[in-house]
Structures are given as C-alpha cells and as structure tokens.
Amino acid sequence: MPKRSNISLRFKQSWVQHENLREVVERSWREPLHDAPMRIVVKKLKRLKLVLKEWSWRVYGNTQIHLKTLEDELENILQEKEQDPFNSKLHNLEVEKATEIQAVKDVEIMTLR
Picture 1 (cartoon, rainbow, N blue to C red):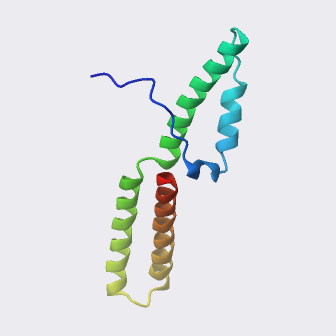
Picture 2 (cartoon, rainbow, N blue to C red):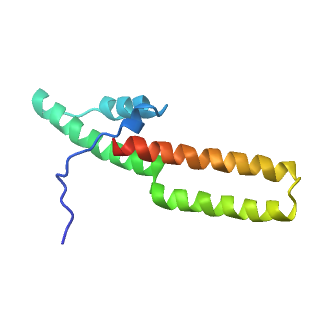
Picture 3 (tube, rainbow, N blue to C red):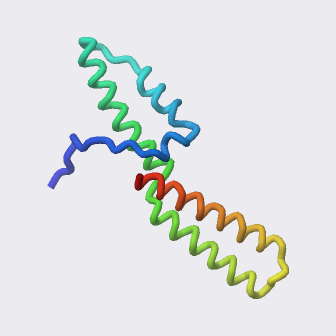
C-alpha cells in the first residue's frame, strides 16, 4: 500500500533551538516559483513541508537507534574503565558520552511535547 502524501507536518519544538532552522526555511522559501500568487504560497508551503521532513531526518535521524549506539559506546568505555580505573582519558570519554546521551534524550523529550 503506497504511503499517503498529504500527511500533515508536525512541527517539533526541538527544531526551534537548532541553529540551522532559519536558514533551511529561508532557502526553501526563496526558491522561485511561477504561478498565481495564492498558488505560489500553497506550493511553497508544500515544498517547505518536504524540506523540513528531510532536514529533520538528516539532523535528528532515528533517535532510538542513535541513543542505543551511544549507550553501547558508553558501556564499552565503562568496561575499559574497570580495567584501568585511573585513566583520565577514559573518564573524560565517559563524561562526554554521558553528555551526548543526555542531549539526545532532551531532544526526544522536546519532540514529544
């Protein structure tokens, strides 16, 4: 069964905090279209919907897969740290990975709002 093409766009709050959102919207809106003024607005909105969906997937991707990957990486770091508990490099990697995990979770929470 083909996917419906007229699915509404769900604007995600997390997009607002991304530094490139404005640029993505402006670039899409500036692309010229030739038609009656009212149809131009409609066509630009449809095009922007597709651009935002593609951009969101490229920027945020599948957060569940990304989160699982980060958690696996953190687990590997923790296992290495058990062998060498005073290794400052591993400690720093652990902190960085935990920060990345929290950032992904924060985006996921904002997306659910």
